[in-house]
Image 1 (cartoon, one colour):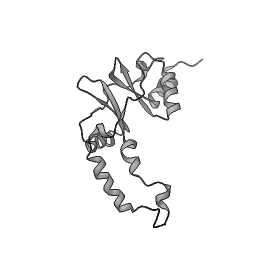
Image 2 (cartoon, rainbow, N blue to C red):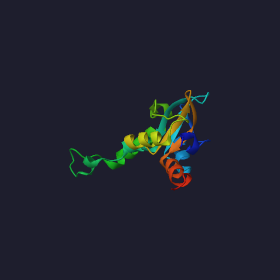
Image 3 (cartoon, rainbow, N blue to C red):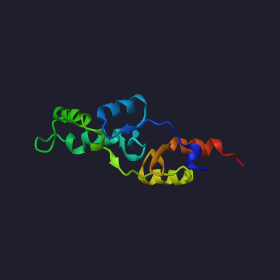
Image 4 (cartoon, rainbow, N blue to C red):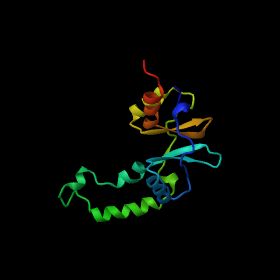
Length: 149
């Protein structure tokens, strides 16, 4: 079974010049945690995830320590959200993401996602975004489409 047999096409994408806030709103409203970033020719430039945008702003374990020297002010931390959400996507996206091709085996995609702890990956041919493949796509393909013995 190949990636093209299970991948999702017509996916949500972003432009590098878009404001992060608008892209996060799109992701949250579509229940999607990652969006490929493309240019005008639909060439893949990068990926932006909710995790990329918000996780660095979340408190870490040391922030919960009630120690005036080492702990952070949580109200001050919230001010960081407005700053990040006002940036352009190109400032927060991951450049040159790991991709798969449409003719790659689905288990290759699943292996990449497992090793790198990804839930989804862009499917690219000649640098152009064709779609996305997710763990759910792989599972549906392998467990529902393949005949049993």
